[in-house]
Image (cartoon, rainbow over all chains, first blue to last red; front, side, top):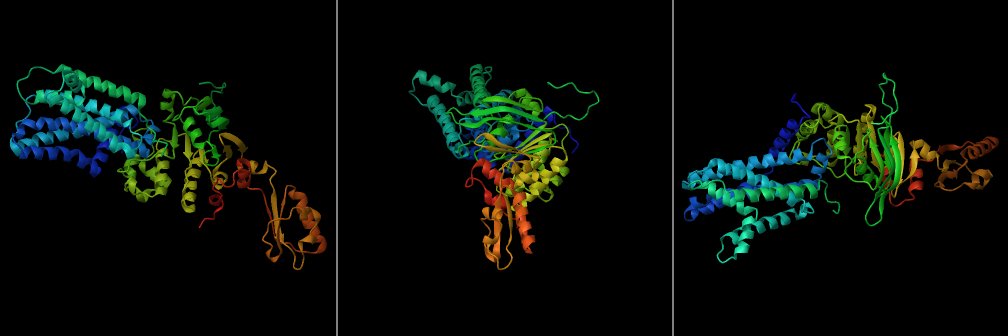
Amino acid sequence: MSAVTGTTWAMFAMQVRVEQRIFWRNLSSVFFTFVLPLVLLFTLWIGDDPAANVQYIVALSVFSTGFQGLAIQVAMHRDQGVLKGLMATPLRPSLLILGKAASVTLVILIESVLIVALSALLFGASFPDHLVALLAFVLLGTATFVALGFALASLVPNAESAPAVTNAAYLGILLASILLGTVDGVPGWLQAVGDVIPFSPLVEGVERAWVGPWHGMPWASVGILAAWFVVGVAWTTRRFRWDPSTNS
Amino acid sequence: MTSAPRKPDETVDDRPVLVVADLRKQYADGTHALAGISFELRRGEVLAVLGPNGAGKTSMVEIVTGSRTRTSGTVELLGADPADRSALQRLRARVAVVAQSAAHLRYLTVRETLAMHRAYYTAPRSVGELLALVGLEDSADQKVRQLSGGQQRRLDVAVALVGRPEVIFLDEPTTGFDPAARRRSWEVIATLARMGTSIVLTTHYMEEASTLADRVLVLRAGEIVGEGTPQELAGSLALETRISARLPLGLADVELPPLVRAGLGGGDGRDGHFEVRTVEPTATLAALTSWAIAHGHELVELRVEPPSLEESYLALTGERGGVDVAAAVEVDA
């Protein structure tokens, strides 16, 4: 190999390549990433009016792959000592994080294309109406959930508790967002809380971009996601550990 | 950088690679991992830091390589302070660390792991050279998770060598190895030393320190309790030299000269075998041999054994039970 090495770009490109390699080689990560949207698609297919709900599967894929999948992987790699080893090299932490983010983005884009294509094939769902806006929301949502995924990983004490902690956070956010946003009789102030839970603005944006006349960007949703992105980055910067837990 | 004025044509940099002064690490509960240690690593030198578990070896390595904070004291690694983040980022291109708790991605092959690390350095070694250096040519296309423990540690060393580091820190590189694997690792470390790399090696095997190191620091409960070449350390403590032989047939040990009798002890007693421990080996040996010559005896199996590094280590750390003595004296099968 005579490729240029040691530059920022060479390091970033290598990180993305390595992340992709280890993702596709690890059958359980591939299975859990793709099985959820496929099962949901199948559930829609056997129900009424399947085409009306495809957009929620896309939103859920962004959330689960970016947030929960990433947090588990990061917590495992930290506990194994992989992150500690990498931090002893000239690779900057920001490049390691950006490489993971880029790789997760790639996986989410593949998932989204697959969901759209399969739903068109299976039950003739139409393509999203506003592709650019949809792409913008998928990317913003991915960035936000990757940042929150790292923040969540900093709350995980060790690899054994990674699935429990990440699932609790994932299901908690999901349930709160759905219940507070859709169930009748929820008081107004609780609905307002539901609106700022990180999953809700993503659903809102994807819904708007999916179907119907374009009424302009839902800036409130953009703002909420961006705010959570800042929270995730700030938390990660302050609290993220690279070393394995010492009380093993 | 601070340095003494140098001649313009001077090419050899003889400043120490690492200078540690009064380094302390204290925890919130008042206990300390390091109680003020000072030492230097000279360019091209192999320094072994020897001590039982919990002596502060790993804390020292982690502080000196910037992955842990210190309470007080100064550290100067290649002229920079590893506690300074931007300095540390530059140091990482010149300093490699083989940590005990670090690992590699399990789903990459050995070759892919080395290729990944090559991307981090401007003038990396080739994958082929690295594989040959640590003897992993036959495992190049195996996944990391399929490697044995010994192969994984060799991969650790190969990864550390990718960027042609000037200084390498090896934290207990052979702990848990069988004797054959340990000997192979020693060959790799000796090769690095011959290439001029400065090496800090922590270990609790005395044989490892005396085989590889130019100089040894003995660490106990966060303090340096001994320092010197392996020979100096062994000689500095007025430890007992052992003299042993077999008595001529039909003689009892009461017939030995008084100076020899005074140190009697040990020896298995079979076939007249006896052992004398003495802090005056010259006088004792003279007394023994002149007695034998005067009486026309031949001293069969006469042996003189100088105090070993192991004995000085045990004397210094005051621990017989806490260290891996068996591993240090085991014979290679």
